[in-house]
Image (cartoon, rainbow, N blue to C red; front, side, top):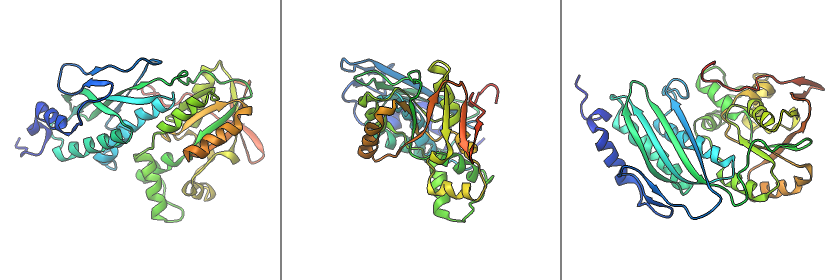
Length: 341
């Protein structure tokens, strides 16, 4: 079949790699050797060790090209991994990108994807050190990041203690609403296009809280932390389980919502429970002793990111929320399961 000269098949694997290599800055710092050899050479200075995270995005499972642009996907593929490092207080260092590409994919699409990926990498002083490409029927993206552990210790999800306060960064539920709008399952109650665009952007281009994660780790007051990928309910459940089977009590009046998100709640189009279960906010959820309140407030002021106390750790082995004068148990603590959902 004639494809012209604008697909990745025409480009070829080595043509793509050569094109990519020309776009990368020269290896520097701990990265001694990047793309172009059989392996990358990363020689970090002595410290507290290296943290590694990896994530895969599969077409039709994690993203829909009907409403996700190449640039959006390039940004998000890296952002979700940066968020994992942020949750442990790590400083990102180098990335590895694996791509399974359909032969009919346009060069222009791949060029746009790489451009957005490298733009976000540059914003976090992160270098692309290597990767792999293969041909496939469906588009698959695999990203692996290495980061430097904080000078103290990485923040784990297993350190929460009884009576700790529970905090979240930013606002909750925007990504869920953005996805619903993109999939045309919801309509804006106000018709405000600016609000619609904001919510869609929150889903398509999440902001990883990398600097905030480093600040929280350096503070020494955070007891446990993770990022919100599966949703507040599921991810808080992961934290509680890892911390020995604790429970939590949340207050719906304290859940931070964006102005756009409030419009949907006030119109009765979504419930607090739906926003808490929605997922892909990529905000940070963490716990800290009650006495750390002032230090947390100072970090929020310095980082210019809202840090909101939404509840407290208890011993009940359930997650309950106080809403409309009553407590109710929240379900769905397991989160999304790729083999069961």
